[in-house]
Length: 143
Image (cartoon, rainbow, N blue to C red):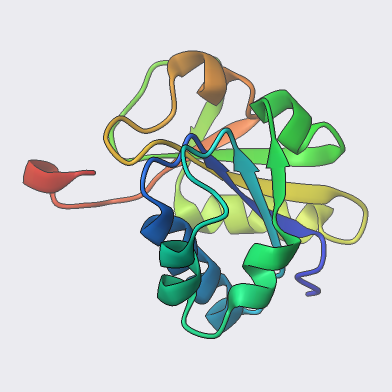
């Protein structure tokens, strides 16, 4: 499976260090396409420091004004959430999401969308996704 069709989309990131941390994790996993929707502070020295060698991903990051802009050319858009949500998109477990990715990776651009550090994605942002995945986390600290 080629990873070139997969992008990571961060929505309204408030702390530039988190952008750098995501870039580093992406580089570790072989992902190359980072989209930022309305980041509060970017570019940033702090993002570069936290990227720890993955600053090439920061240099190539695409900054967008809206989520629609970031996923306009994607055939599969998957939102992420830490809590159970009742929205228009279908919730799938992680393994089922990966089945969908495998089905579409040869023909479509694919976006994984992550929300704000404190509050995640809004319901309307999750509705923009075909599917959403609830990532199991510690309930007392789901941020």
